[in-house]
Image 1: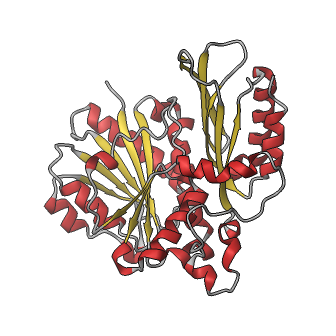
Image 2 (image 1 turned 180 degrees about the vertical axis):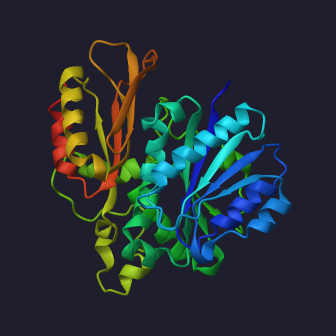
Length: 356
């Protein structure tokens, strides 16, 4: 039996997750979707509407707080669903897990890798994060969980952009890009999203595609080798980058350095020494794992003609041999790390020392 794809839908309170979900459920894409909810309080989806509109199986997890209890609940729920599907009691093709506006997607994602029974039945496809343009600046400033959700995302949808001036939307997108250069961003209206942008994104697949925005890399270039000079970036595209909510506080220009969720990229044209790299990564994951949200790399390892692809979530790290380096293709190591207050210099210098 093939694996059941699962999608984690996360986002700020009031960002329109319910709207997006209804849209996805009611669109005629031919999928049968089981939804696992762990919303509570005023955001609770109107069960009647969903069930009557769409012939879906909705599981309401009304256990109040999710932060600590969701993992066990989620495992049980996923196992029950898979069993019902096997017995033919329920018919569905995929699962969408909608988390609360305050949840950290980390433990939810880890459930798919740490529990063998779940891993044999489900394939975690991606984390989708919905950001509310109107309230984003304040939510990102005030709530770490909002910043975590951005750092964790494979795809970011920005809602309510029509309620905000264009330069504010640009500033927001710029800020999100610094927190997470891996996730494509897309403005959405009333949850209208093409299904191809929601499902089968393969965010957790070990593949040799490392989506980092080329402009982000360009912008980072002149700092890559100047370790320790973490000055504000020179913005290639003009000076209007003060994020609205920071501008009011009067420290206009060192904006995104205020966010504790940040990303950085390591690149080198030299090959890695496999043993050294393994030791180093093992050590940093041990120490900083809880603060490492997502990380991925396409690596040039000494001793193999094939690319090595590695990625991780918190303390869980996996790697695999990818395709052979093509004739004439520059064998560049490229790694991106997204996390909370990670010591960039320690990482970059440590990686530098793992080169053969």
